[in-house]
Image (cartoon, rainbow, N blue to C red):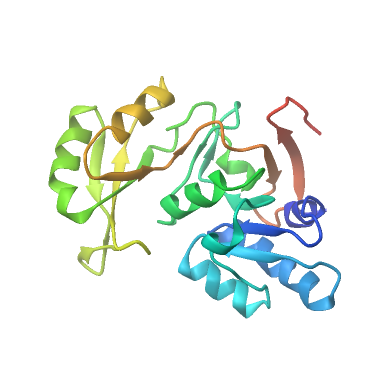
Length: 227
């Protein structure tokens, strides 16, 4: 069984669900679409990015906006880091703000990762993305530096990159983070910060697979269960 197949088992028939962004999430959307097209599963999806919306339409998954959906049954997404407490760093794919909003709108957040994304402490891979309003970017860079981070403006083709929300991303270099909750609060207090890639206390279930084929190797839940 792959992590995609296990995630499908967690989707209630007839539910409205959040659809994450990134390689693992899009792999799940592909399998979900096959179930929808065959009539074996009836769902509607709320995408976390324009690219996810494109992938979902390509695979035949019906979509709706968050304004229509209300509370979601579950969101299935990926992550860039997962620590032993199931806290996450997300946002390497630049969709962190919408991913956090959709996750917060869901009763359950299921995370799909390869084994290489498991870390002993958040920040081990050396980066925390922060989404900022372009006008405030200079201020945000100074304040983030004062917090001991090393912000670098994300660029595409030599120009500042733009998120689906028309904002910018500051990739903040970091050492392993001693107090993620304190860092999250300090970053969010900076005027112009829209959101951070720290997803603390949000994941309910993490499905871990081998990087090559995402074959399920572990399932971890916030209630302490592991299989």
